[in-house]
Image 1 (cartoon, rainbow, N blue to C red):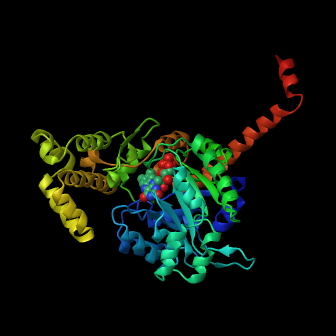
Image 2 (image 1 turned 90 degrees about the horizontal axis):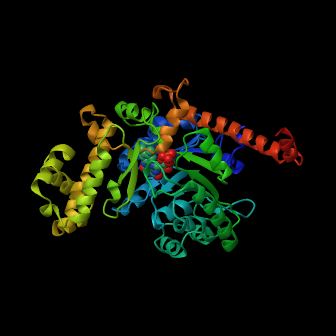
Image 3 (image 1 turned 90 degrees about the vertical axis):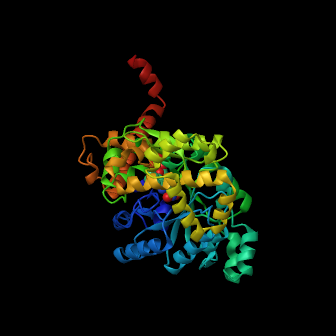
Length: 462
Ligand SMILES: Cc1cc2nc3c(=O)[nH]c(=O)nc-3n(C[C@H](O)[C@H](O)[C@H](O)COP(=O)(O)O)c2cc1C
């Protein structure tokens, strides 16, 4: 019955077995092997391209495409790049050149020309007169104002500029206003990794209504599907998401603790031990200055406390020169494992190549320089967890949320209690199959109670 959950058009459009998605995990944690395994099982997943160089993404696409059938589902994460916007164009070129037909667009606040170009390239008239996009966009969003942009056609000003520069054809530009920017929008409630800490019970129904309202306003024929993500790690949670009106579900945290995920065994051992309260909120390294947050594993590491302390120091000081020497010494010895001068040298070298204007700004602005030095710690702590240096566990930054703890409890005593047996496709199958049973049992119980004489029988029994 798992196939009966969600919107059937999700299954047919994406060529998958059920309305379930395994979401991207950046820096290749959602690895090639992980995507390949899910694709072969007929489950849609997204390669974790965030934080990787274009050459690494290109080789991942090549490996995935060489290992799966032409109709097997897979996609690539298209993470908005606030620091170096030009990188988005590089990614679009790469995706188009490799015929990648589905992306998971995330971290967007305003839709960018690079994303619109991906969506519109190949847009043509379908046989029944409905415009048919070649490239599918699934947007992962937690704010209604961002969802609006994906539910509507692409911004006409962006379309005109793309046409003006010859980056899309005249027909693609003409048809642009008759399709929504996204085919699927996933409403992301409080999740592992970057989180706006929204509540699924309010977010999903709100997005469903927003979709219906905007469909009337725009008159578009294509119905955008609404999915649910955040906190999904048990069959009951999956069943609840469908009951809220989700057309599909998307999991994250639980997929990191699987054999094919690209993170160390040490980190997976730590995740497999986690219970519901073992997670905390820390600053997001990539959006440190604006106060963005990530949800991370707390048990077995000191990272959340250390990350929050760095953010507090950043908030209350004008530059590294204002921070007392003993505090800086502690940060160098315990957090960074090297001198601040060494961190700055590495950081400056990186920015000199990738974004020299940022480096010039930082050299004139001690607060920006402090942010860049602290941000290095967030890159370093992620790398430590991915590489799995056991002596550095105190600094492991492991993105995850309570869905992981809930899954550990659900799977305790089963044949997949050990993460080495917990392949992501097995998790998907079990979640969906058991969610269908939960759904059925609840509906049966409801139907029995809702029979006209049921109240009478209940009274008689008393
Ligand atoms: C380790 C990890 C890394 C993640 N990296 C990304 C990413 O690079 N891009 C992205 O769109 N979402 C990323 N996510 C979010 C997931 O794709 C998914 O939306 C989220 O984890 C769902 O919530 P849950 O963790 O409560 O299941 C990441 C999640 C985790 C756990």
